[in-house]
Every structure is written in structure tokens, then in C-alpha cells.
Image 1: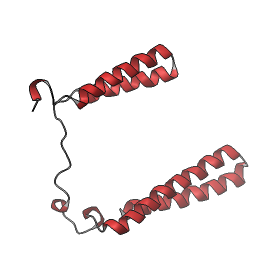
Image 2: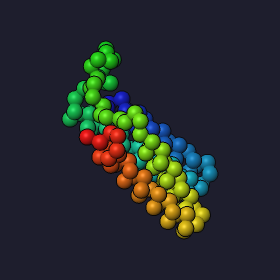
Image 3: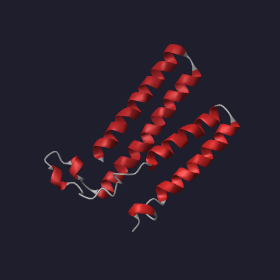
Image 4: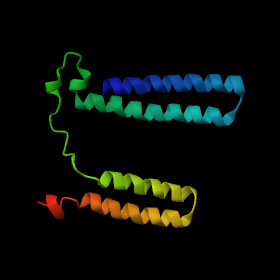
Length: 131
């Protein structure tokens, strides 16, 4: 996590310098505020990662001499046959379009989103792949 924390710390310094330079060049408050807040967010993430790296210790990703076998072998279970993530993505897209364009589309999207999430969560409780 030290590498990731250092990258965000560099991002904090970069956005801080850019925000100051932007202010002196343009005197524009909105862009300066956006750049300063971006630097602040980079600081938050970088601080968390560097603070956590001290408590967790060295990971295989932090060791330049590590081999691939040093990493954790179990990353979880990913369903190779599931079509539900596509349904969730389409329903999310319809919901977002409903937020932009029309309330009826939002209601349709939320309904489809709820149905697709229920299908995604319970796909291993019914049907061919039930336990």
C-alpha cells in the first residue's frame, strides 16, 4: 500500500501546485476550488493508504522480489455463467437516463433495477445451479 499511498501523495502535491498556479494565472474561483478539493481528496486517500500500510505490513505487491505465488490464491467466487450483471448494468443505465429525462423512465429503471438485483442475489437458490 505504500506505492499507492505515495502516488496519491504526489497527486496531492501536484493538484496543490496546479491550484495555486491556476489562481494566479486566471483569478477564477470555481476552477481553483475544484483543483483544491481534488488535492484534498487525494490527500484523504493517500493518508488512509499510508496509515494503513504501517499497520498491515508488507504485501507481496510491495516487495520488488516477490513472485506471483506469494499473492493470496483465493480472490473469491465469480460466476462464469451469470447474465445478471448485464441486466443490472442495463437497469442502472435506464435509471440514470430516468434521472436525466423523465420520471416515468426513472420509475421503470428503479423497478427493473430491483428485479435484476434480486435475480443476481438469488441466482444460486433456484434453478439449475441451486445448492
